[in-house]
Image (tube, rainbow, N blue to C red; front, side, top):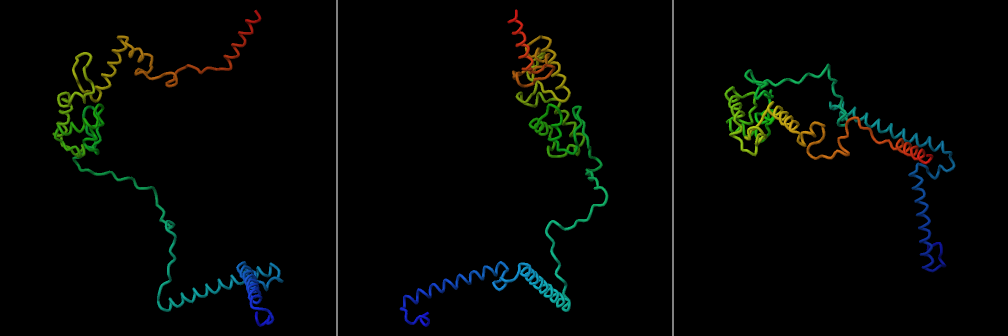
Length: 272
């Protein structure tokens, strides 16, 4: 700039140099922006259709070049005796062979010729494939703690399948069930201080339903509060009945009809 402005001082020349640099920088940035958009400054006089055709030709040429390059690589590999790299499919989208026919049924486990699939104890059929401590809980009136106590008292393996037990072991279980009153502590019995005898006992299997029915009939016969509530089918243990347990033929209150009846009765009275 000093060459073009010899008569100017140094400060003026520096100022002109700065502004010229700014001008050329703006011009260069505009050219780069237009280039990124796919439009060149030289194409300003061309129509948009011609510019679009030019861009499509360029993309087609680049695609052709890449395809030619891949073909040449495959030819080189064939000459060397190599194999084409297989395309790895997306995980989870591999085609699985279709299942022919219906699915095969589940095979039943074979526990041996001496295995008992159903064991009869206390008028109850127990599943032989379950453990002893689990199978005993199928008897009505026997829970987890009592089943554990029965297995320990009988000397039977509580983790063994009850179908694998021999006949002597099953007899031991039956004997223990017959004398639960003497083996089990009082707080574990389910029927203490019987009304007729006054003794503590433990009921199992069908004895539970029979004794329950007899106790309810006794309460109805002596006409106590619980017996009366049982007769009418109402809750016995103090539950609320205003909002819960509304069953039967009782209908809800119809507000509109009640209001009309009240208005008609009031009008008749006023006329009189």
